[in-house]
Each structure stands twice: as structure tokens, then as C-alpha cells.
Image (cartoon, helix red, strand yellow):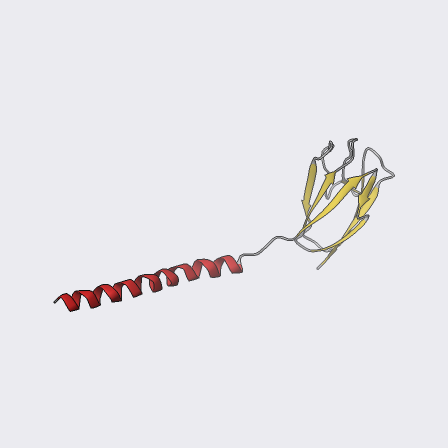
Length: 121
């Protein structure tokens, strides 16, 4: 009887890690297939958007960061696609581009500051 119990305990010890692995596998697979969001950055510094032209894929979220010591704003040339509030030093504005095309923009406080996001399908 003692041998039977020992054999059963050994089988249970082997089965537990295997069952734990089979339970963990779906969650790892789900994590691996989860979509990732592409991101890109534009720095505002010394009255310049850098890079001046940024090329991204559809679905990319672009974040502008004001590294200047004066306020700036990011506004699409059409005044409707995207428009930030006034950004003080170290503040950011983000926009996700969902359609291919060219999106020129400017600083509404300093209109000579311009940039463009090119979105590819």
C-alpha cells in the first residue's frame, strides 16, 4: 500500500508542473499576439520641430514634446485634424494617425515654425 501511495504522490508531483505549464501557455500566446502601438516623437526646441518631416505608418501615435523655454502649440494646417493646447516647457501633445496622407502643421503662436507628418499605409 505504501508503494502505491508513493507512486501516486510521484505522479501527482509530475502532473502538477505540466498542468501549470498548459495553463500558462494560452496567456503567453495571448500576450505574444496582442497588437503593439507604434509611437514616434517630435521635439520642439529652439523654435524648431525636429524632425521637420516625420514618416510613420498608419496607426502610429506621434507625441510632440516642448523642450523650449517658451510656449508652443501644434496645429494641423487644416485647423481641424489635430490641435494642441498651448504647451509649456516639458508638456506633451499626442495624436494617432489613422489614415495615410501628408499632414503639415505649424505652431499657432510662432507661425514660422512648421513641420509635416507623412503617414504611409
